[in-house]
Image (tube, rainbow, N blue to C red; front, side, top):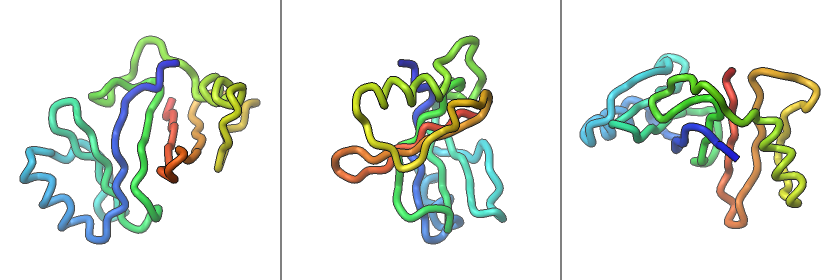
Amino acid sequence: MALGAFSLSLAVKDIQASKDFYQKFGFTVVGGDQQQGWLIMRNSSQTIGLFQGMFENNMLTFNPGWDNQGNPTETFTDVRSIQQTLKDQGVDFISEVDENTSGPGSFMLMDPDGNPILVDQHR
């Protein structure tokens, strides 16, 4: 199962303060819209998302169809296939992607310790 690019999505209180902080670690803004309350920052192949007011907790994020630089991959495992594989193994979901669709879609679940995991396909 190819999960695609991995990033940590951080629920931040002050996006400017968080941006300034992570820039000290060498992260640069590669996407997003600070006025809308979200930024994507990268340092080499490490990616973090800063999200102010969009969700309550930090979460692990996987993006099928993207590499670690946010570029489309030639082949990838569709989010619906990943979801079905996890369902077949008895995993419970918070939200699911409609299996009768194609293209972009996402699902969310929690690991045993309550950490949210988002699998979010953009293509």
